Image (tube, rainbow, N blue to C red):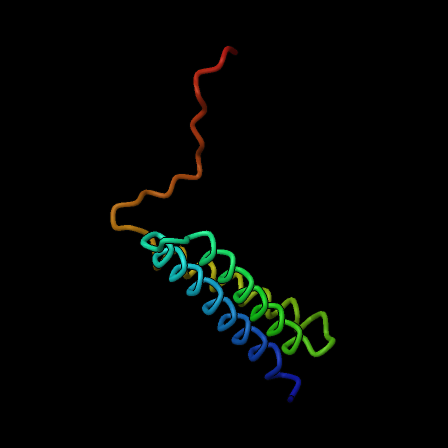
Amino acid sequence: MSEPLSPVLALLAGGILGAIFYGGLWWTVRTSVSSAQPALWILCSLLIRTGIALTGFFFVSGGSWMQMVECLLGFVLAQRAAIWLTRQPGDKQSHLVTEAGHAP
């Protein structure tokens, strides 16, 4: 693989792995809600999604920690995209946490 193109491909591969992982999670949650055995769906999905992601990271890294970091960055960007794409209309994302009434 050519050196200048390597970071872009690792980032793209991480994005694809993230899309598979979080897309699979989204599908699993939607499917398990109406299933007779939701725990089985969730457990099997977790094992399959994690196996695919770890195998992908192993092959993309090729022994290079820099490619591993670039792949991880693509994975995290895919997570952010999944959160953005699956939020409900009208959701207001507040980063402030309101606490229950405590004594000062």
